[in-house]
Image 1 (cartoon, helix red, strand yellow):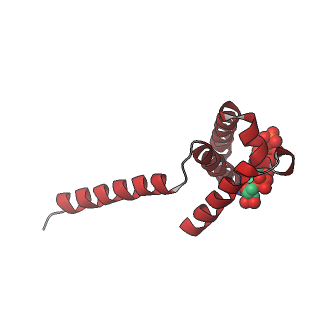
Image 2 (cartoon, helix red, strand yellow):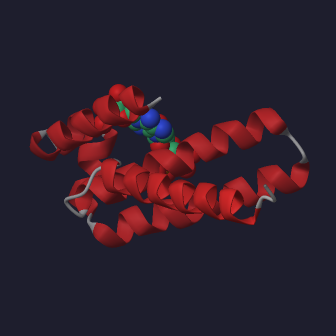
Image 3 (cartoon, helix red, strand yellow):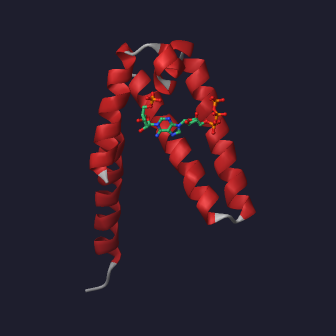
Length: 105
Ligand SMILES: N=c1c2ncn([C@@H]3O[C@H](COP(=O)(O)OP(=O)(O)OP(=O)(O)O)[C@@H](O)[C@H]3O)c2ncn1[C@@H]1O[C@H](COP(=O)(O)O)[C@@H](O)[C@H]1O
């Protein structure tokens, strides 16, 4: 799974040098941070609506749009998916320790 994120992150990085007329991502970078944030907000709203509708296919599609646009945001801010994955791993490690600590012998 991380391979897909890493490969997509590489493409998003390369799009920083692409012609905005040739690429959706390059066009979004050219519009700037506010345009990227607007897309993240729109995709989050569409995710909520899909969940409320109870359509699992649509929910998956909208979450893919949401994740994609958060990756564009990370790239724009000079970050990639790795720090986010590391933070999730750190939290998972913490919760794993908590579970072990609270489990009776
Ligand atoms: N994963 C995606 C991806 N997911 C969603 N989108 C685009 O995100 C937009 C989603 O916005 P909406 O649903 O609101 O649709 P829309 O009305 O067309 O959006 P707007 O044009 O109004 O912003 C659509 O235009 C989708 O095409 C994506 N565009 C690109 N990618 C990946 O990014 C790579 C680079 O893309 P390009 O920059 O286009 O080459 C591609 O190879 C893909 O792997």
